[in-house]
Image (cartoon, rainbow, N blue to C red; front, side, top):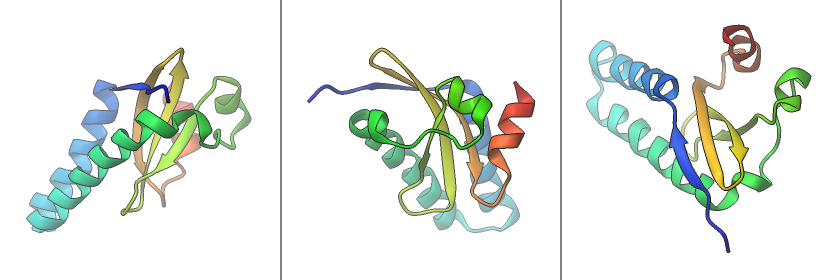
Length: 108
């Protein structure tokens, strides 16, 4: 089985850090913050083997650009990513309750 190399963009890492910081410093729940961080790592690791099999975004403009989503394994967050050859580029991280496809589309 071929593995994908997973690269997390600075933007996606910054978004993830904002969520984790909010949980840790605003909600004052250090354990939950660690759990979300670990879930992000585990989800990125899962992309190494499953990136090509996951669903494309529903929004037509993102789908045409090859963007896909993966839900975090244990928390209500998603990663938006695209594949080039054998490399996965994670471009953004959002909470599932956000209108993440439209937000991401408008940020580009």
